[in-house]
Image (cartoon, rainbow over all chains, first blue to last red; front, side, top):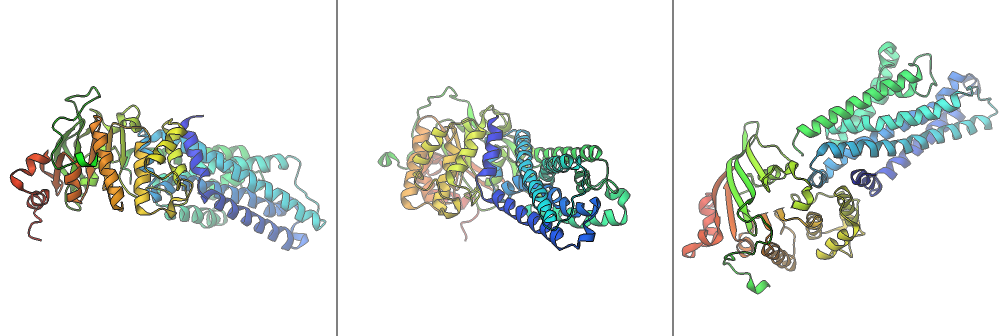
Length: 245
Length: 257
């Protein structure tokens, strides 16, 4: 493993930022899954598409928090000024960004794994406790976690690229929240033909949970990979061209 | 060691590396504009190995911008900023050639001092032993496990210096390193920088504390509003009994304040 990558992984490990984000994500997944799994009336949880409403929070929140991890890995350095020693030690800034993409992708994968795991485990337990039969198909049980984890792994470089472009930490985090929870919801509700191509919808498509509205899982994965590549490339170019703050 | 430090420049500091005569730092018609603001204006100076140079000028004169240009953190609008004959970003292994501290607080408050140094060392393939060595050198070994947010300003200055020294560089570029240091710390820093230069290495240090500068440096570069006002040895500038402060205030137009 390159020294640069080890340095980036140490940055992820050596502050309480990531544990804090992890706990927040864990709590939110737990809350959302339990509320939907326990509070919705049983007749509204009978069909597979209803049960999606319980399970989808794992991949949704996993992708969101992986995006935040990626965004924080660059905007945190800018905010605290560590970007200066970082680029003094590695003057080839592209190498730093590449290592950040890999490191935050790895951390994002762990976040995705945890979020999906909690959603599937707690969601299934909640339904079972109420005697509601789980109507998802066998294939859903591989695609749902795999897609959710892969979506989180891709959202990390997407957030990183956005952070490298915007540079301001609060602006970046607010932009990611607004986009995923407000703008994309509006798009899906009013212009679903456009909304299904948005990056959050592409992440959701990868789980295969909502095939009626969303793209096919493979297409969603390809599209999200494209978004991540474009954001990471744009963030890299901006970092190379602009003066270090 | 401290007693040998006086206001006379060392006549001919030992130069142990092979770069005799080659300037270590060169600013050549260096300019930096931010929109309409000209921060650095056609600045030209050169520093030789084995010297300690004081980089002086009023607030906003362009000192920090010049240092950022030399360190490759900002790109010149015109002219060149070179260290060891190259642009910083073209150096093979920058931390082993140049150590720099620009801000006294470039740390994540929640990270320990040791982890700050370890993450930089990893990126430059510098061993963990060296991290402990520089911690000991700046006397932070006991605080190294604590989060930086518990550090005083003087401790942060020393941690920044420790990071700059990780790669055992030949050139040190320091922006206001004495800020927040206690008298013992200032004394230590002065001896350290003199010793560094006596081993043939080079220091460029910006400062506002002229009395301290006069005790530490042998070369002076004064800029004002982005332009070079004077560059020369401390002895030349302070001949005929003038103090560095008198020279500085005359050149930067601050004498009437």
